[in-house]
Length: 536
Image 1: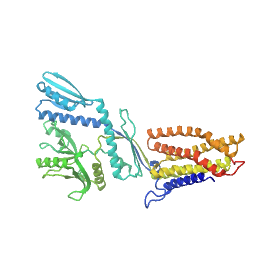
Image 2: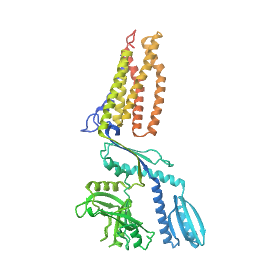
Image 3: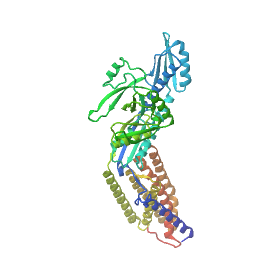
């Protein structure tokens, strides 16, 4: 045997040994064998969600906030106006500005919001009305950032749940100019309803002051309006107050200030705790800025009610007895699980917009086990039939093809184990397809060698010629399939990506084994001897 060939074969064996190690060895100390390869949703069981981010929510919220800021600024500058509110579509409407101060009003809007809105105005009977319409560029940018922020918030919540190998990705659009759908796949989940609630809950927290006079609680919205003289002031709103008192639970309404004292943005952390009666509750802690605002507000409003609002619903409305600084507590007849889930939501941050569940699919663990057994069984049958066919048709040269098939599979599974890839049922299909394509490459080579032998060439010359002449054919067929796999990975989701990964890596392994390994095996068999006849 030539010295160079010996070293080539040794390096190949070392490489295959490393691949085998990464496939069969435990992923970490104490883990079982073959644990490096993670099982996907369809094999392990779990939940698959398609969520749409309602990006209009973020735009509408921003419009309302800008309308409130403009109103506050005009009051501070003594600019007379009738109202500042969100108008039709994506616009802010400011009405009844005194014509004498219209120039100052316009200058403020242009200086502050000129890059964000398109400004229009009209004057009638000594009054000027302004309309601020969001620009298309700003709307698109806001929609995109809202989806990205929603994805990161969901990711934080999923990470806090401790789900292994989750799949989260922005997927596609639903008629909007941006991709506003998110795919969420969580393997190993056995309580899909709870997880769905945790993921889709917006968890927008704010602490607001209850109206000092005639703030409630009231039994209905109508009674709240009547008690306030038939009109709720612009700076206030009516919120549902669902107070849980056991058998005496009731639904009431409070009139609260629109401008919050603090919001979820001022939150540093939250954790499950207990209230004064030992019942489950949620304690929250504020950052330095939030603590200053909270301390100032509670000091100035001792004796008034402070409403703790979560997702526009009042959860509790305690009376402020003294100055409070950096922490507070949310009460409300929680179970221990509910308190834990709420603290998780508050820690992970509020979603910037609401989510709509467009699609949901749950896979049970038993169905996943059936898929594993069926996939392995199908793979073994296919592998066995391919080996049998190659040995019958190509005789001793078929052993070469079998070795290449085994090496191909070892490289593919070793790579997946090394990177901790997730194996899905389509991924198993990709492995089976890779086996078929590997055999196809060997068949092309073997048939070409047969043709060269029939033309009268010696065995060694026929082998060398067969590999060299079929090289570009194999590369061409595999490269075109590689391009297809790349596009499947780029534009596909979960299971489709699993298929694309196994197909891509399997094809790379196929090129290596069919062109390089198979040729080295023939060289090793031929050696330095003169062989008159090849079993092929």
